[in-house]
Image (cartoon, rainbow, N blue to C red; front, side, top):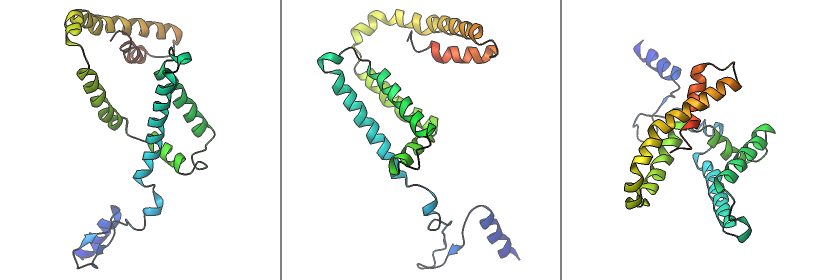
Length: 187
């Protein structure tokens, strides 16, 4: 029977029975109502995001206080992020922290490409809009030297250092790590 094969195929691919209630539109339910308790709501991710923004704002405010002008905000935020993740993941507190723990878990499972493609354009656009074009014209040649040969030399030196420091790493792995680390400083 052809109808039996169709329902088996739909059930095999995770779909549910066709819903004939509600006017008989034939909309597949795909087990949506039954699976609600199995996954967290996407809005919970906002707790971690808002907490991170508030923490960044607090760090910006603290850095403006007289005794903290030399504080590097990026370094402090990085260290706070690493410490909080080590505590939450290392002590397995995700379930004990409730909504905050679920929100943290959602951010830890985010697709890195989504994060890159979401955050990089506004950062680049913000920097591009605040650039002083007269200064940029004066230092354009220096920027090209640093972005081209400067990054290549930094990559090679970092890769060589890593190969000497950790000999069991392959040359290509050292070169990849050198390329990731070598591009940050000169540019």
